[in-house]
Length: 302
Ligand SMILES: O=C(O)CCC(=O)C(=O)O
Ligand SMILES: [Fe+2]
Image (cartoon, rainbow, N blue to C red; front, side):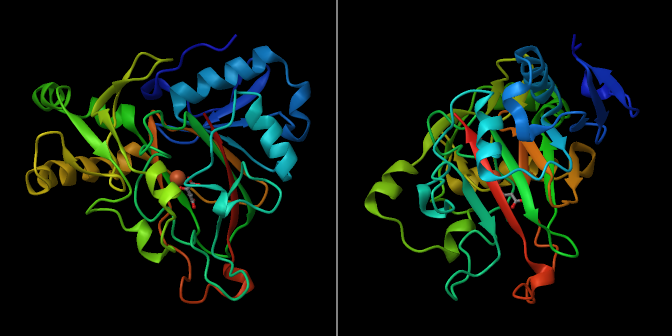
């Protein structure tokens, strides 16, 4: 049976857990899991699914290499962990026929630039603008650019643990407003205006700045660069220096893992204890050339 592994004590070698081969991806977060064929996820025992879920809560992200899933298989594996969430603002970024998937790509469609080509240019956690944000997300790579196109992940356990007791105490009393319509958010600039219905859905929500992860009982920092520009009762100007400081800790290399994608990879992340970010680290100016194309699909757990 899977044993709780504290991130600090994660071994760097391959280990067998519940019949699966697992290997930490970095000191603070991430585990690669091998020995599973996710194309036939209906055959994976419930005990293994539970073990994967526990490992995800502890390590923040799970990597499955070489899976080559199609949309159906991707959604079937996701559903093994519970009901799906609405993927994003609406299904406007869904591939045809799959409203539960969110397409992240730099490939033009009908001569139009993709609105998701730089969807993740800031650190964030998915759907924190909702009163009940997505629990977890699963992103799979179909096409990776010749260089870059990486995704970075950061552990909010590690960031919280790195704070002084004084700052932990102060942050523990605060709430922050999460919305895409804020002074720090860059992502809306290249998007078509929202419909009234879309705008109402992403209006925003208040969340405590420090949360306890329901599965592990560990505390996490819960603010992010993309969605938050002020604390409750503080002005944007007053909040900015502290948010800048916290965002700097989120991107600190000691708290992160950087993933170099290969087509066929699938990464699951827990939105409650990690953040992610896609640096524009490929030839963005030359992205219309096929060797710079990037095509990813995300499913989201409610
Ligand atoms: O493009 C990426 O690597 C990440 C995209 C993203 O933020 C998401 O799918 O939630
Ligand atoms: Fe995201």
